[in-house]
Image (cartoon, rainbow, N blue to C red; front, side, top):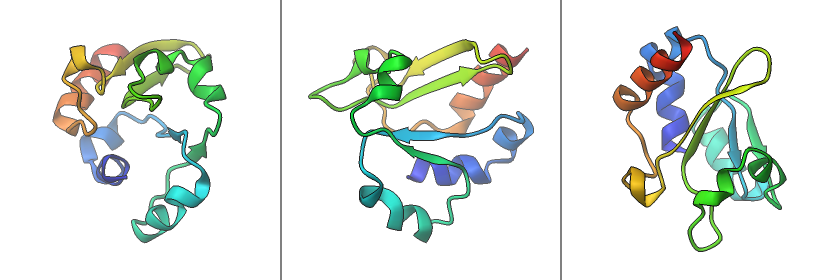
Length: 111
């Protein structure tokens, strides 16, 4: 949740004018209270069964049956223009990505 909280507050991320949608394979009951306690205002999707995660092919980076920490950038036409899983070992195995790392990569893709 810390990632979502920090991105919601980050001015550089806000200037990108992108919608933040968090998707987790956990049931709503696993994160609902924490989301409320942290005043998360961006949409959160419970993807139990990983249907959406599989649609975007992000489960390929799973470890131990758990998804990694993947960002997917979808353009206005619904096309995936960038995917990066920071949780994958080849990308450092990170479960938190500082906005100073994430924002420039998104800026590059947004043009």
